[in-house]
Image (tube, rainbow, N blue to C red; front, side, top):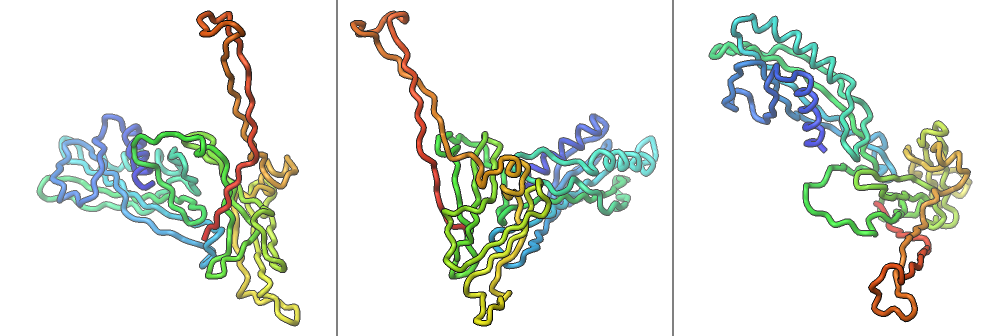
Length: 315
């Protein structure tokens, strides 16, 4: 993920400045790189990240926000024109091109575009009279269920039919008891870069008798919701509830809270059916082997298997 975003940022800077600057990436200090700018030079680099989980301890389901920080270092060698006066317009140009921009990285859900943070003048190097400036940008990515998605390495990855069949994972409470919540994540692959997933209240992920789950849509149509799971063990003898034993949090992509789920009126997406349209060419009677297309016949076959359902616990 970090490399994909850095690649996108590198291309964005390069396309903005064109041939007016050399755009490269460095992880080490500029002084240690051995590079000297003969014209404007922009260095793109990843500098840090931090992750925030609003639902501390609620491992499933939860959404974490990962904030990534990238820096742009502008180096201009003083030549015929004043280096300081030449650098300031470039900083403005970069800020206009990058602030608010969202990279196109498949599989990542961006919460914000690039936001410009601190800008500063670093120094004028005494040896080569280089003017050095620095811009810092941050961008936030949503990480569902705590998983950090990344694009696979370039390699031959054969496609199998099973990769495109819908699957289900039941959601359980954290801890040693791992109680079934009655929630499940339904997922299917649309193509090599697109995956569709929804959280549904699934009766197949059965709760124990007495356990209770409440899912409330935050804004009908946007898929967000809050949930409260109350196990039977949280109910005291007097009928009061021990809130320390409850599991609460927020959800995204809840089927019944999405626009599609609201319109369909169904509890579940209409996924678990697979139609395979194929055909069988066979010889007409008395024409074995078949050598003429006009003497062969085509018999269409339609295979409709039962629902594919793979239950797995997620902790």
